[in-house]
Length: 247
Ligand SMILES: O=C(O)c1cc(=O)[nH]c(=O)n1[C@@H]1O[C@H](COP(=O)(O)O)[C@@H](O)[C@H]1O
Image 1 (spheres, helix red, strand yellow):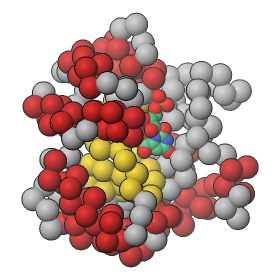
Image 2: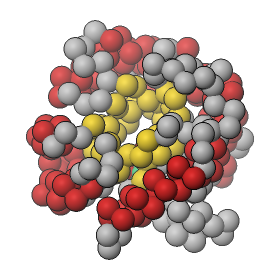
Image 3: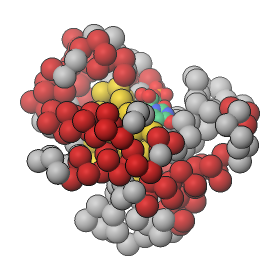
């Protein structure tokens, strides 16, 4: 069953902790990203863990292998359950991250960002590629070859990643909106957007949602609406056997 991760994009630990307590019991996972971690530091990770939540540390590491190895080790020592790095950092960087994770006590799951959900083909054309799915597939392949647990992509590419990796890579998909509209209304700064049912049927394992939940009048009710939509989608079509990647 796909899991929902709540993105706590706040400038202060107090706001993030208030939201975490509000959603407590509704969702198991929270995401601590650049804004919150830069403002609040490692302490906010410990605070979330003490609340009994699983923590996805989303700092998108992208540096030389030695630096990323050290950063992954530091994150693992904080007790995070999952973290991100950029797939475009190269094979040696991805392998260094994996080695650091495997040799740490916590061994957090490693997810490589392929093409950000805020990017369109126009943006990737600057990198010499205007076929977003093809670029996602190639970066996902490199991530799989380096032994990572999964990739971050949009729900639009999840099926491709699942099929191409023969189910070995998990898919984490942000850019989720309850009513994804073709004209982009309600998508905020996201470009490759899908609704929860679509993400689940495409094989997404983790759906990341921020503003539609944290900005809602009743965040707990918003979580339940997302979970209902995920559950109504039923089991993923074309999803490999359970346990192919995460036991
Ligand atoms: O790594 C991520 O989590 C991420 C990757 C990506 O390609 N797109 C993306 O939106 N995210 C994160 O997912 C969250 C989406 O937030 P909302 O657009 O508010 O739902 C943000 O915290 C982003 O940092």
